[in-house]
Amino acid sequence: MSAPTVRPRIPVPVLALAGIAVGFFVLPLAGLLWRAPWASAWRVLSAPVTLDALWLSLTCSLWATAISLVFGVPLAWVLARLRFPGRSVVRALCTVSMVVPPVVGGVALFAALGRRGLLGQYLDLWFGVRLPFSTAGVVVAQTFVAMPFLVVTVEAAIRQHDRRIEEAAHTLGAGTWYVFRRVTLPAIRPALVAGTVLTWARALGEFGATITFAGNFPGTTRTLPLATYLALETAPEEAIVSALVLIGVSFAVIVGLRDRWVGTAMGSR
Amino acid sequence: MSAGLDVAARLRLGALDLDVDLRVGADETVALLGPNGSGKTTLLRIISGLQPLEEGHVRLDGTVLDDPATGTFVPAERRSVGVVFQDYLLFPHLSARENVAFGPRARGSGRAAARAVADGWLDRVGLTAVAGTRVDRLSGGQRQRVAIARALATTPRVLLLDEPLAALDASTRSDVRRLLRRHLADHGGPRLVVSHDPVDAYALADRVVVLEDGRVTHDGTLAEVAAHPRSAYVGRLVGTNLLDGELTGTTLRLRAGGTLVVAKGDVADGPCLVTVAPSAVALHRAAPSGSPRNTWSATVAEIDRFGDRVRVRLDGPVPLAAEVTPAAVDDLALHLGDVVWASVKATEIVVRAA
Image (tube, rainbow over all chains, first blue to last red; front, side, top):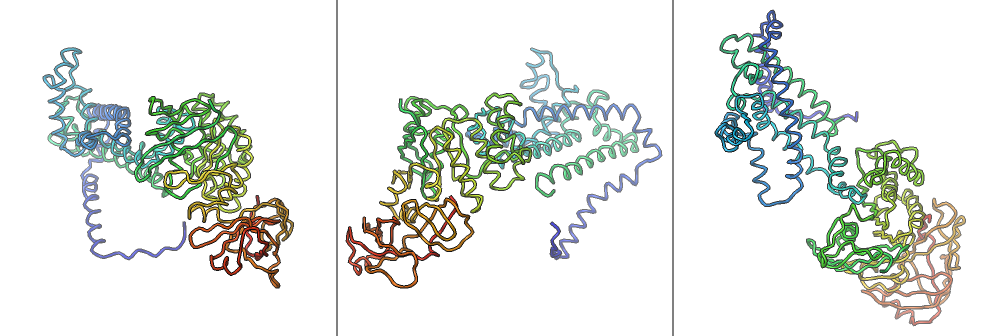
């Protein structure tokens, strides 16, 4: 693929506007780096409060990702492959949490799973399970907001996958579950990985639904985004360090995602 | 309890209105010919269990696979019907060996046993060298061989092939055709080959069934179908003369007895298939003088008119059909049993390796 190509001619206004857009994204990062207290960064990072928040963020977001995979992939398959009345309504209901303000999501979760919520009252009554203001509540809030990213990505991949290949597998003697595991899942692997990483990144950065539904208790529900926001009031320097950690993780994810998976999925490498 | 495949298919699907009765005997190969949209692929899907019937039945050796009247429907994975799909439909993320081993694995074989079966089949189709290669890196001909091996590796009771040669270039095509011929003969169950090329039908099938608009319009040997085309489609399709013989240099000794001189091409000496367009066969009342080296006298066996053309079937050392205009028939005053002279130019004879 090294044939000479004509360099695209660029309309000046497009170039100028694109440049402004790049600046808009780069400037806040530059601001953070500029304000970062490099001298005390390590002390802040290694402080138990920060480490607790980071650890909580990592474990909760990984749980949320795992739960999203277990339920989201089957949901994506159902939305992609089954024709049933009201399918688009079901799809809208299952992905709306991607676009509503996370705080609204948190309030809704409270109404459903709170101690006096629709389902929450029975969880409490029958099992003594109280999700609000618990670490499990953090996982629930993150899953609620992040899972749609997986569902949307994986559903698109399943739709694009040639169904006849699955039919070919049936004629070879493979039942539906075998085909799902051995044909469908491997075929959509790039999208599965991309969706998983996107979901995890969204869960890691979750703020609004978490603070609304799970509260802000150090050690149990105070994740890194919450800690960052809180520190802004009391110790702005710590907030900047936490913010840089979150940005670093997200940046690594996006770069890794593009080169490894999205690129391969689109056939560029 | 008749052996073989017995299909009575009635189904409406979009624009297609299928109403077909088809029997394929045990150890018989039937070629299914027909224009696009005539229902060939749908019929294969019905037999393989990917498309349920509305009405009718699918029976294999007396066992009911689909019968809406009794609510019987055996799903594809429990039918033992091997399918070679038109565009292969291999598993792109797997190697050639894993593709072929997929069927045995899905049917419960262990990893090692399935691998042994796959390697055996890859050897039989000449792909041992690329067994470990991902199929999306193989050529079209290699993929087709993998697809054939994959379908045969489950030892299916019925074999269905959807345009198995359509996507291949000419030289690969004759290789794969030879391969198919061998394995179809070894298979031992009913076999159905969808094709649009009468040469494939001639080389592979015992019988030809023509499907048009969801109905069977012709059923018989290729010679029978070609002799009495009842539609313009079949007239064009099998209108061409098919002969086979033995090529030595530019001399072709026909199995029917005659000899033809052909243009020097790149076909190697040996058994070959020959097509001659009926319109390339000229008829004369007297022995023509001059150029055509392929001249022989023949008896008019049949005169069939279809459309604005007349097909004249000739008996003799070179049995073929000529296509002429009604005016020419009048000019030559042709009648059944007349002895005429026929000629064809060497360059009008298309030779292919058998």
